[in-house]
Amino acid sequence: MPVSDIRDSTIHPASTDLAIFYERVRSDAACLLHLKELRWGADLERFCCPNCGSSKGWWLDRRQLAECRVCGKQSSVTAGTVFHRVRTSLRKWFCAVYLLHPNRKRITTMELAKLIHVSYATAWLMLKKLRSAMGTRIEDYGLERLMRVNEAGQRQAASTT
Ligand SMILES: [Zn+2]
Image (cartoon, rainbow, N blue to C red):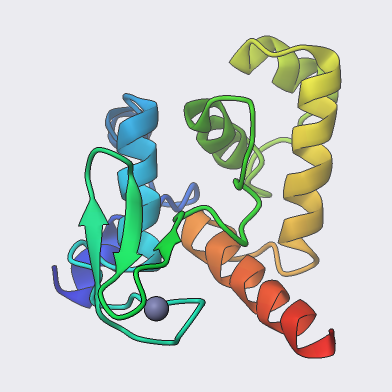
C-alpha cells in the first residue's frame, strides 16, 4: 500500500465522514488491522523489532501479532500506545477518538459514557488517557498522530531509563 493510501486511511475526524468512519470500526479486528496499517504498513514495510531492530517481520493472522523473522520476538501493534492492554473494546476507543476531536463540541464524561455505552468510570479513564496522549498538539489529532505521539513517548522513556 503506497504511503498516500495510508494517509488517506487515517481516521482524521476533521475530514472523515461518519459513514467511512463507521465502516472502519465495524469490528475490533478491523480496528486492530487499521492500527497495524497505520503503524507498520499493510505488509509490515515499516516494522521495526523492539528486541533486535530488524525490519523483517511477518504478521501472524491467528494471533494478531507481528513476529520478527530474525529473533522471533512477537510484538503487539498496540504496545507502547494508549490502546495497549485496554479492556474496553477497540471500537469504543476509536469512537472516543472520533468524538474527542477539538473541532467538535467539548464532550463531558457523562456524554461519552452514554454515547459509547461504557460506565462513567471507564469513560473518565478513557478521556484522561486520550487527553494526556493528545497533549497540547490537538490541531492534527487523529489516530495516526496518536500512534506517533505515543511511540515518541515510549522512545523517550526507554532512553531515560
Ligand atoms: Zn527481532
